[in-house]
Amino acid sequence: MIINIVGGRGKMGQVHAPIFKRAGHKVIISGRETIPSLEEATKQADITIFSVPISALEDNLKNFGKYCKALMDFSSVKTLPIEWMLKYTSKDCEVAGLHPEYGSIPSIKNRSIIYCKTERTGEKCEEIVRCLQNEGAKIRTMTPKYHDLLATRNQLARLALMKTLGVYLAETIDVEDIYESSPPPTKIIIDLLARQVAPENDEMYDAMEKYNPFWQSEKQQLLKCMQRVLEGKENPDKIRKFFGKELEPAQKRAAEFIKQVK
Image 1 (cartoon, rainbow, N blue to C red):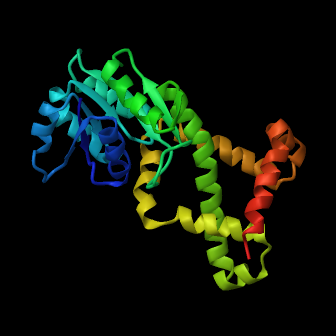
Image 2: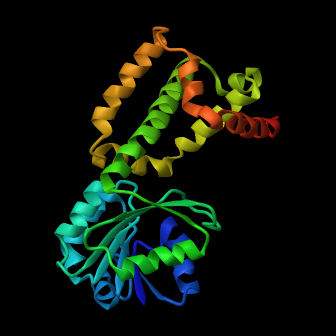
């Protein structure tokens, strides 16, 4: 099978192109200034995978979707991209969405990938998923809307709360002071904050907010929850109940992380 990865020189292309080659497929990397051109590569390929920013995806599909025999994407949002893929391709073009839940890594073994099927998902899309499974990836199948709702509820809280913490600290304390005066758990949180605000993440996080259909409604839910917490109307019992049988394993994992912090 000939697999065309549009934007394949980026992080996702660099991770996945070798995987498809190891499975025996020919991989074409295409983009704005490649040989073959994006149009030529799309015409040649049995399946095209778009690995481009969501802000550029619709225009690319308008121009090149008509040439696709099968089509997938690596976007972190799924509802709109899949609507676009179905809209700008022929009725006999296979369509499915993927969301690899990782960045630039040496191996996808035990890493999660969300797989969103459509009424036009077929054997070419399934072969891509088999390649990923053979490399040890964990495939989770769900609808595009459920994916976006789930992504909003776990990503929105992290992004909003960490950003709020970061702005609060930036306005009230020196970074050296907080490292010197904080216990290990706080140092871990500060380091995660630093990772989150890496400049290369800005575009991805902006796209999540702009293109995820649940972002605004869930943001209101989060604000109401934060208000209850700040007013002392919630207590840790609800959180312990949320963890259930996972509470102790999570505490043990946290303890191992903390041991590594100096």
